Image 1: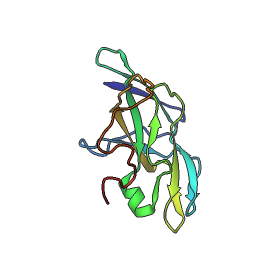
Image 2: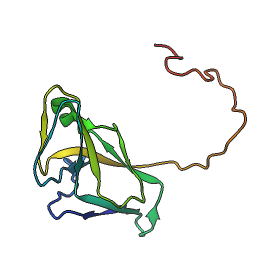
Image 3: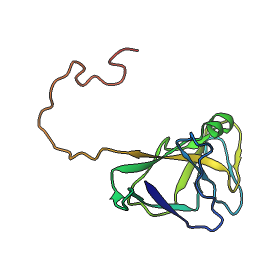
Image 4: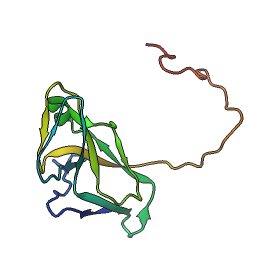
Length: 152
């Protein structure tokens, strides 16, 4: 499979995989000047990158996938910075710049510099079922039991 991308900003860093075993592509901050994120604050950080369609080996566009933006574990655990929406979803038809809304969960200000790895992007297949409305749903043992209904 091939996913083409475009550098919207010539100073952007191409997405990279840290190792051959890495599942996610690191997304890098594309900033003219560094950013400071205060405790409890969320700041939108651009990557300078946009993605095109996912193509199969024959050049046909695949529609049953999505790009999912996750935190980088080191940045989240050491600096308290992670995506504000926990997991960002990039739809197959979005062609604009990828932004990461970084939230500072720590008690101290954190800085983000140009080129810094700020999130990771994982491409995954998704199911796109046809939704059908019903008047009644089938019964199950759990029923409508919600949070905590199956135990602690």
